[in-house]
Length: 195
Image (cartoon, rainbow, N blue to C red; front, top):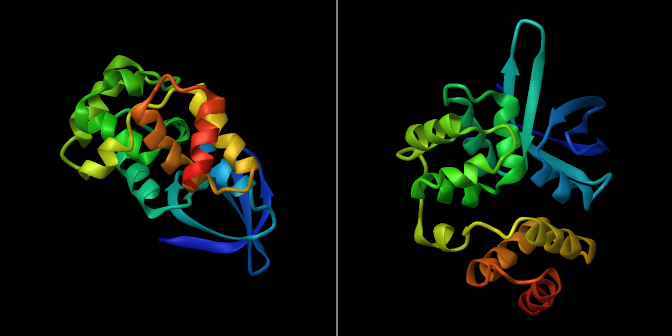
């Protein structure tokens, strides 16, 4: 089994990255969350933690910037009815802390907000994973449901200003947890003071 692939980021799209490792280009499926982070550093050295999906007709790699994201992905594909692409879609819509918070608190509405996730699948994810995820107080407090588009726009703006997506999400997570109705402009101003 491949644990991770490290190499130069040769190509990047919102759905996959090609990592050149010793002259071999590995096409690795990625989440939109990781795309935002990878997009800020084209052509640089990249390390993706890999999960392999081996089928009769294909050998597919799914890559994640953190071990935590890969672990959550592997938990999700272990749930009946959740395949690799559905798990990737969930992790493209929710950060790992947001997902852990939704599962631990039984918030099926958060999961149902992800395109393609119905009530039955959301409930199954919660029931199957509630006892398997780690939930510390800090992750719960910093992972309140975000204000959707406003949050995403704020993250994108901070990334364009040169901050990493991870830094931006951490700070904005705290800000939106305290004030979910915050505007994009206000969020960016406050985040810049904290970064």
